[in-house]
Structures are given as C-alpha cells and as structure tokens.
Length: 461
Image (cartoon, rainbow, N blue to C red):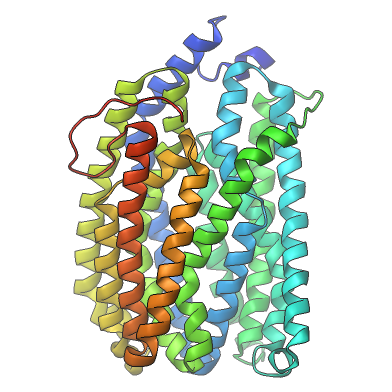
C-alpha cells in the first residue's frame, strides 16, 4: 500500500486531507459501538482470568504473602504507566492526526521514539525506586526485599507494553491493544505460578513477581511482533522526524496526569501498606480485583471512542462530536450500573473463593462499586480534556482528587480500617468525575454527563 493510501486511512482516493479526516471520522463513529462491545468482552474475559489468578495466588500464598505481592504489584503499575512520559496516551492524539495529514515521517519518528523513551523511562524509574528502598535498609532487609528486586526488572517491560497498547489503540485496533496485556499476560502469570509451585518453588510473593516478569516479557513480545507486522503492511519505510517539542509539550502534562491517575487508582493500597498489616492489604486488594469488572465498562468505552473525539474535532463536526459524547456517556453509565449490580449479587461467591476470611471484604466491594457508578454518571470528561486540549486542567483535577483521597484515607483508615479506605476512594472518585465534567464543559462547551442536554462545542481552548 502506498504512503498516501495509508495516510488516507480507509479512503483510497486522492481526496483532500480535510475530506479524508471527515470520512475517517464518520466511519470511526459508525463502528464505535461494536468496537466498545468487543473491547468490553475481552476485558471481561481478562478480568475473569485475572480474578482466577488472584484467587489461586491468595489460596497458595496465604494472606500475608498475598498482601506483599499486591503492594509490590501496585508500585509496578504506577511506575510502568508513568514511564512513557505520556507518549502512550499521546499516541491516540498525534498518530491519527499525522496520519490524516500524510506526515508519515512524523508517524515513524513517534513510533520509534516513544518505544525507546518508554523502555528507558521504565528502567530509570525502577532503579530510582530501588535506590530509595536501599536508603531505607529495613525495606530491602524485610519481607518486601526479594519482591522489590525482581520488580525492578518488571517495570521497563511493563512500560514498553503500555506504550504498545497506546499505539494499537491509536490505530483503531482495540483488540490488539488490550488482549496481550490483559488476557495473555494474566493467563501466563496464573499458569507460571501454578507451574512454579508444582516444580517445588515456594509460594512466596517474590515467586509471583518473577512469574509476572516472565509473563510480561512474553506478552509484550507477542504484542510487539504482531503490531509491527500490521504497521509494516500500511506504513512504508522512510525517514523519521522527531517533533519532541510539540509531542512532549502535550504529553508531559498527560504523563503527570497519568502518574496522578495511577496514584489515584492505587493510593488506597499504598497507604494501607503503610498503615495496615499485609493480611489486611490482601483483603482490600481482593475486593479491588473484583471491582475491576465494573471499571472495565468505562475503559472499554474510552478505548473505542477517545481517538474518535480528536478525529471529529479535526474534521469540524462539532454536532457529531457532542452526539458521540452523549451516547458514550449514557451507555457507559447504564453498563456500569448493570455490571455493578451483578458484581454485588455474586460478591459472596466471588470473595469466598479467595478464602473464608475474605468475606470481610464485602462492605469494601459494595462501597467501591457505588463510587464507580457515581463517577460514571458524569461521562467522559477526562477523555475530552486529554483528546481535545485541556491536559493541564485534567492534571490539576486529578492531583486535587489525589490529595483529597490521601487526606480522607489518612483520616478514615485509622478509624475504620479497610472500610475507611473504601469510603475515601469512593467519595474522591465521584468528585473527580464531577470535576472532569465541569472542566470539559468550561473548556470545550461539551456536556458530558449521561443525561445532559445537547450542547454545542466551542472549539479547542
């Protein structure tokens, strides 16, 4: 396929760039619902696989070792998501635009540069974390020592795969984006842990992290090979242009937001690691793993529609953009409610599989689900701010929500334990969704709540 054909996406004629973007955006919106359903199906399957993996690990390791594993895994996720400097998320913003304009040299530069930055950033953050742990000698000399040492190797691979996911999403390949990290990787972790214990390895947290290392390496390799093969079929070889100033000007705020978002998603587990024994952390983490079934509704909708927001704005279709936002918000809210009710109904069985002690996590799960439902009511305000401009406001809102969550956790955990952590996060999550919706309305004139009236976009701020 020729370069101009790839730049035009699904329109193989010599149409002008504006007409190409318009046609691509219309086709993208037409397939948004099917793509979201497909993404949701894969994420549900992945969540089921991850749930089984967590059940097996909790059963095999016991409450204390499982709590240690959960704490270290949270730090891997925080550092790995942050290490790409926002280029993983920026791929959905820049690659479709450069593609539509025919700037294939910039596309090639972004693809290679982002991969190198993500891997190097992951290694740098992992080594920095190891240095901090070394300064605090009691950390490496205690129960967390061996898992942390193994985790240093996991973080760069995690960051690289996070970037691959972003590139696949930017090309409209949501299945390729999510199946390797969320289905293949989880399945390999589960199989690896079972195999390791059967061959005589101790059922300890460091063994689970080592299985995570191998699984992440294999899954990232498979995803990278498939993604590269698909890109080569459409993207001819040629020179590369690196527009670091433009990219990083937009992506560094996204990276800050990603760090804040990752910290927001895991700060409860992190603080519990300091304020509660590992067994309590394990109880809480088990509830969060089941609650992920609810979160995946919003994730699936975002994966399928966020790049289409940028495309609709690029082709000037403000009415279509507003309609797409309203449809996404309503379906996401209804889906979240339905999945949340199903999770609560099945919670006694789902938690019981972890062990008899894990029934104590039921109030935690119910509170977290309620917070997720409340947040979903306010729609994709975060996606609007990231895709259309408003990254700094998005970061500011997330940082404020993070600060609120920390404050609430520090106040409520000593009083109510893991239930206090759940109350803190549910409240902060709902308020963050409200603030994102208000920000999207103020900056872009787009109403994002699920039951809002139609509004007219006001252009990029």
